[in-house]
Image (cartoon, rainbow over all chains, first blue to last red; front, side, top):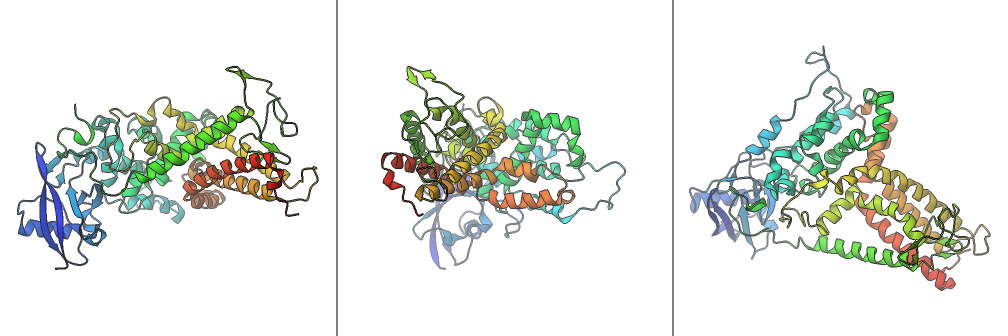
Length: 253
Length: 267
């Protein structure tokens, strides 16, 4: 074993809990998830942790490491100093179930509130063709692994539980942006619902969602701000609104 | 009732954040720089003097639109007369500064900067904010941020005027063309940084091509959008450089106004 690690792991449930000190051996090249598994195998047999792929692609092992939302399987132990104590807690924006596992069902409820893509009438599956330049734009958003780190770090819901009912969060703003930018989607009220139903106006562009995204999706610059500008076209820009009514520009965009 | 990270059902952790890094440094620097700029700009606007040293004019006072402007400093005439506010003659700077100020206040980058550093909403990622309630940009006054594009358009007019100021700086104090001084370089850089700030603006990116759904149907706009998108990645840098250089340009013109020898002529 290369080094001895000092950890503080939060243990508990939705009623009570505390940080517990643990000392564990670690090897070169290991990640936090490896260490949690060693603790589970040697010292805390009932430690609850959600994980799956160990490759940063399933989005299961989201947690907070030294207060930062991260994927445990992508966080190298070597990033922390020899004498540093590493504090591991569950995501703090969602209700805890047990230990490091949280209830992220809020996100699934929000996902269901966003209407799926609607193809033009008469177009059959297999018929649509897209140019690469049109595909590329939404491909960035399709990299999302639904780890919900962006949702967890967004202060709109992290710091204000009461906003959860009216705020979809950054993960779903990229979904809305992807659909609104899609050349074949015919549902044209996405801008209006983004603002009025999904709470786009709550976002104050502090970019924490972009900072924590393990897929490096430019959530704010490429999805949220463009959607805010599209909303402004319809809702806050009388000149654009008038122009769209006179020339029916929507159809040529 | 407890809210935020202390809400019912969430992990019972007493600390507002468990971050161990120096997360407070960035907001602190932002506060220091922006506050210094605000203090300096306010003082200079109130000073109402030393803003013109032919052929150089301070960007804080350009265009100078008041009859109180120093002779020769008004590029567009003087439609505003003596305006008295609180017993003092209103400085011509206050007539125009609302527009560049509005452009920066509603800017998508500065929103991040001041929401984090001044309003602490949040001070840093995963650091709990101190406010009990939050409605973001859904209500007045912050809903005004949705009108950023109007300030962007007005900003283009200012950029044009400041570029003309930089071109006029190729004159010597006697009004003859074909000369270049340190002041010319300062004003040229000022105009360049401001154009960079405007061209990298998110509203510009949207207007150029961001609002399109079919890039493939608009190849020229798509190409322009890719160029603006590249600039847009540097928007933060342009925001800071242009802000600091505007203040420096003003400082330089002030010093030349007091000590004309500061403006060294190359030819």
